[in-house]
Length: 149
Image 1: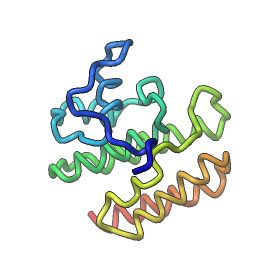
Image 2: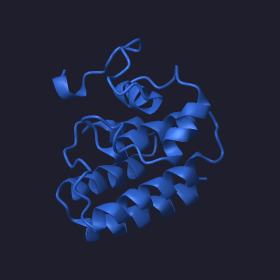
Image 3: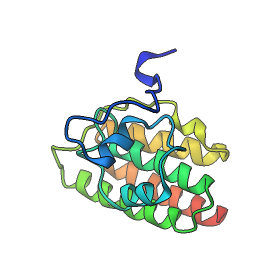
């Protein structure tokens, strides 16, 4: 197994900054133990500081998939709003946002293969600092999610 994709323990220690969002981001592999309220809060916010070594978009994606599996109705809208905000910040050249993808197989976590491939392509564009093509892919992701709803 790739060491970068290894899943951290569910009972991993809380990170040094002690924030609940940071603790959630540390355990991206298993979000099922987290309360929906904490996941919704993370999804509505911008997890840049809490993302640790992960792309903030990866934190949002994992959170979105967990909330969607729980049947949360507002998960899609909150996910799209947050990703669009992050995308706007990337378009403006925010230097504080990481651009190294540590979770390269997370697109396989979704049942819809087309949505997974769109997400994979979006992250590749983000990592390559190609926000123009990423913007079109984000529109395609939004369309795919709205059609699936």
